[in-house]
Length: 66
Image (cartoon, rainbow, N blue to C red; front, side, top):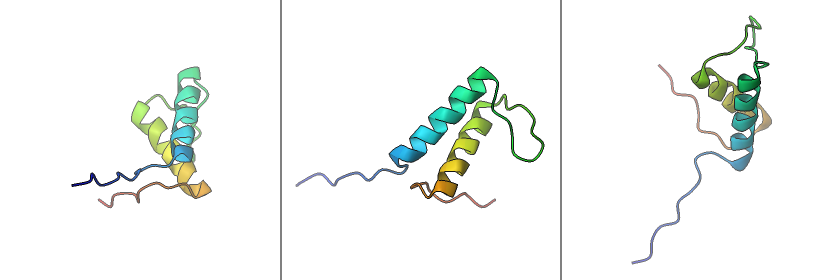
């Protein structure tokens, strides 16, 4: 049997946005939206990158509802 082709969950564009956010976080220039506070958390940086990718229309899974 042939193997089923795996689809990407996140597009290359989304990966670029996350990478950019992570680079900015390391440089200390990444700021959060409303408050404008400096982002120190790695998870928060990833969330910001994915959020920007969503706005640009990149392929990113929907946010999980709590």
